[in-house]
Structure formats: C-alpha cells, structure tokens
Image 1: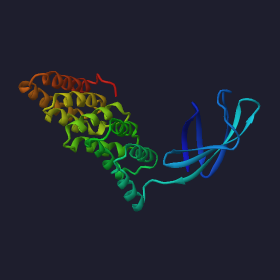
Image 2: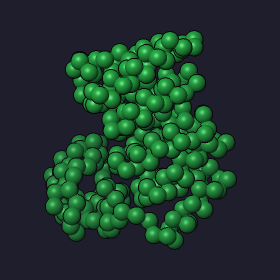
Image 3: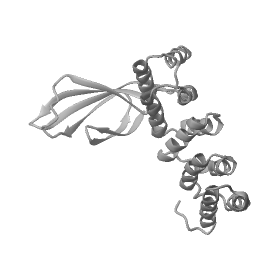
Image 4: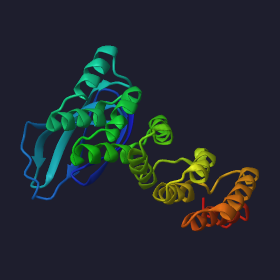
Length: 251
C-alpha cells in the first residue's frame, strides 16, 4: 500500500491507498506539450511507478494513470555484488549512472561504500553527487549511517565535507547531540570544529538538561586551554547549551 504526495510537473498530487493501479485528472498549462501514450517511470518511497499520459480533456486537462510496478526495501545479494563492482569503475560517466541508480533503488547496507568515494581522487562531479545524495537522505537509518561514517572516517577532508552535507540536510540528529558536542571538544582542526558547531546548534535544542549542564562544564574547561580561534567556538557551543537549559532556544 502506497500513500504520500508526489510533485509532478510542479503540480502537487496526493496519492492515497494505491495498491496496484489508479488514475487522476490534473490541469496543465498549454506550455506542457504532452502526448497520448507517452509514459515516464520514477521512484517514490521505494516503489517503481509508471505514469501514462492518456488524453487531454478540452485544451489543458490531462488524464494520467499511475501504476505501482514493484515495491522493494532491499537489494538482493546478486544486486549488491553487481552494484559494488560498478562503484569501482574508472569511468566517471558510468559511475554517475550507478549513483543515480542508488538514489532511486539503493539499499542502506551499501551506503558506506558509496560514502567512501569521498576518500577517493574521483572527479568533482562524482564527489558532489555523493554529497547531494547525503543531503537528500530522509530515511532515519540511512541518516544515522551517514553520521557514523562522518564520525569514524580517518579522512579529514571527507569528514569536513560530510559535516557540511549533514548540517545542510533536513535530517534530524537531535538524538546524537551529545556525540556532536564531543566532536567539537575533541577535534584539533579549526575548520572541522566550526562546521560541527553549526551541526550542533541545529540539533541541540532538545538535549536533556543534565547532559547539557555536563557539556557546559566541559566547554568551560576547554575555553581555558583553547588555542587560537577555538575559544570562540567553545563559547558559542556553551552559550547555546545555556540557552537550551534556560528554555531560550527554539526546538
């Protein structure tokens, strides 16, 4: 059963209680030159959907049929093996096609392999595509996998890029605010600390008050021994926590 909203030619369409096939009418401006028997395929909530353009009503109303073809949540072992082999191609054009496939059909189990491309010397277009994928992650489990990769990778450049992609995304990491604070406290790279501070401020509004108080103390201690530039970062994080304790930040 599929439910949700799709955006089709800038028209928001509500899909409800669809199990196999259904249809709907929608008004279009005449500038969209759509023809009978045309079809497109796209993916929505891990379902493959085909939309058929049937016919126009009068001059600007179109009858569309959509059909749920498959519903999947994971790749099978053969598909994973093939996907991982395609990630190793030296051809950037082919790799970009593989990443596009992942966007629509990907399994969270192979996400770490996709993210490790950030540690490679691949082209800027490949790196940017991977970061865009991170920014588009909506699945809670996938977002956590991305966070784990960011916190565990030993590649400083990949970590900084991931931190930026994570705070620019809409993903919620409030349940990991304490870990984000520890990243600020333990990094010796100013640029990384600065980026993590933004991630922290975006996700620390709901941190428990006892944890917040403990972190305030840790940041105060860090301020006393902070190197150039770090004092401002530690003070900003500390003040954000104080505001949270006092109920002065927005959730």
